[in-house]
Length: 209
Image (cartoon, rainbow, N blue to C red; front, side, top):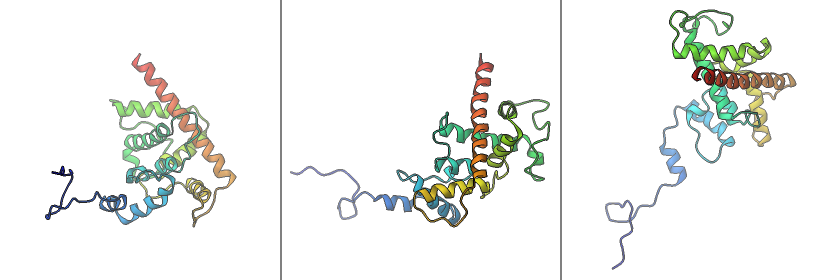
């Protein structure tokens, strides 16, 4: 007697075929219409698996997917995560000022001034590392991490750099392409993020010693 094949079967006992990749992708909840459109725009950069909404929800995530953190002297994911963490910690630290303006870099003090928490100390380490750089670097990092934090938009210079990456993959682009000033600003952004990654890690090692 032939051995019964394993697997799910219908009511008539017939073996069901596994769902196709397209069916699995359709069944998965990818978010609202705007999120799905954004995912489709970035799918060209990552074809081996569907993108999760949190991967392309902000500037650092979109820059990472487009490969803008590649070929730098630090892990691309570590750079992305440092950028995201700095934005999150910044707005945690300056939560009382968030509704007023995103351009509050000169403010001093904040939530941890009396009893600093681990978050406060982490933000201080990142901010101290960034503070060692010239003001154009800080402004470039702020544009990526802070000015558009919580928004569906990204910094215009970053959007133009992403448009260029799409053109290189022979994809249509409705917006503008980057200028030399945009490329220079991105170099400043990466310099600041690399310093934050290295500086914060070094301070943590010293604190743990």
